[in-house]
Length: 242
Picture 1 (tube, helix red, strand yellow):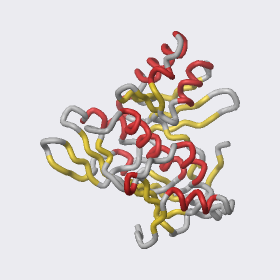
Picture 2: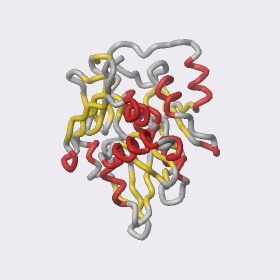
Picture 3: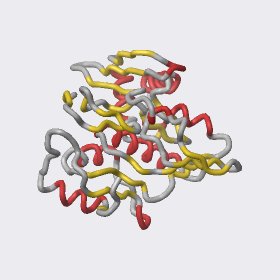
């Protein structure tokens, strides 16, 4: 990926005001969006999801390693949500992951998302993400919206399933968790608490400290004969999911 032209989230917002649309046939090679440089706060996942289809970027780069061994739960949830939205819109991602020695169980929960360039594990050093499953198989965990339901496809071998979510409380928890939010917000009453626990048990909601984030990728643009690369889709004719 060319890194010759960089822009930050402020510049992306400014360009979006022009209402420019990505032309049919794909995302042209243009600037690389860099997030989190110089202490800049990461944008909300919903904002990035709205901006990326309107502004052509060659990819998205996280300026700092995602150190899940040190970051608080709310920041980890936001990073996961941003990676998920990049996958949803087809933007390639450059990022690196740092884990504590006891956090290796996070990898099979997250490796449907774009693969990091490197993974550093405390006490074990840095390795490539060669075993990251999205590098070989796109769409391992995704969902689409129906008129009054959500359809989730989980093709991870350990939990292969197709799930229809039509219970109102479960739907609310699933959608609220897309942004990443406090666990107490998701479990605000017994019905929502039961729904959150059920989604977490099914591997669709990840709790990180006192926060949680929804994991399945929203398949807004379904690839038809598309080239699937590194956990993202290179657009080549797309069927819109409204």
